Image (tube, rainbow, N blue to C red):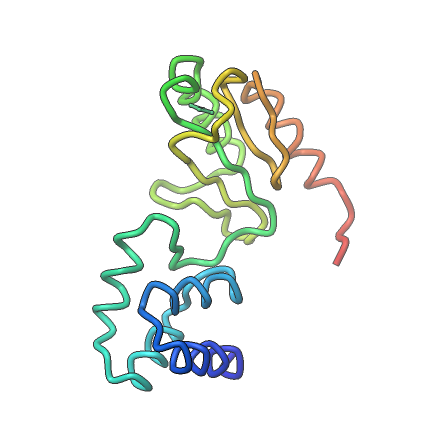
Length: 156
Ligand code: FES
């Protein structure tokens, strides 16, 4: 991981970049922004770690925890909310046994992400499973898909 961080730092220095770009590169490479990456950049650049955390927590695009192998994105925008998004999210959280305040299962298999609008409101309620859009869906349909994913043999 250090080698990757050094490459990111090199690009940052060459471009005279900013903290946002540095964090974006880190997340793109590693999937999230690990604590050790913040420590590394902080020491190398002489910038307080709190400045990195300030930016990372201000923008919702940044993740400070690893993402699960499978990503479920549930829309909770107005159109989806009106059509039962809350019930879907509740059903998915229950199926995934997500502890309060957590969005990734302890085994690292699934992350449930909530977003404001997926831009396909006419298909509300909308959920994405590993990048595939499921419109006019329900908790039952997505739970079935989660179960099917769990049954699939590992492809790694
Ligand atoms: S509100 Fe859900 S797709 Fe727009």
